Image 1 (cartoon, one colour):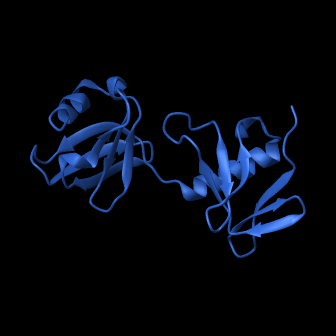
Image 2 (cartoon, helix red, strand yellow; image 1 turned 60 degrees about the horizontal axis):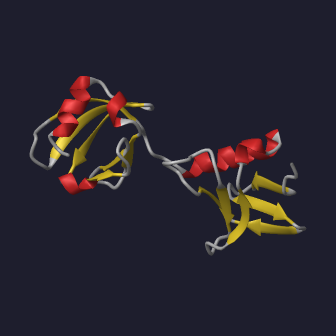
Length: 155
């Protein structure tokens, strides 16, 4: 399989840059095409104006150095803690304070309204807090019984 010839790197000023076809593009952004449904597939590299410079259908099949650079650029841009357990909800009316365990540790946030819980699929939810931080529930049925019972009150 032929891979595109490119170099993605962090400049000395902390800005991602892409060397492609002999041209250096500064201030590029790496984004997942399907961040929830297929996070390990299809990645796009965009210029500072949002125009696509490079499409990578299988970024994990690139040579190791390219894969590591793509993953580092994605990590620097993305922040979506994944809720693994709902420990407590202050009230079943909103606004309410939620105490949750995420893959990044224990945290609390305020849910302003039930409309801030969006169903992405039969199993996947996104919960937005009062500051706009989005929390992912990737597999609702796999949560423990207590967490599901608390969530049922809002769905």
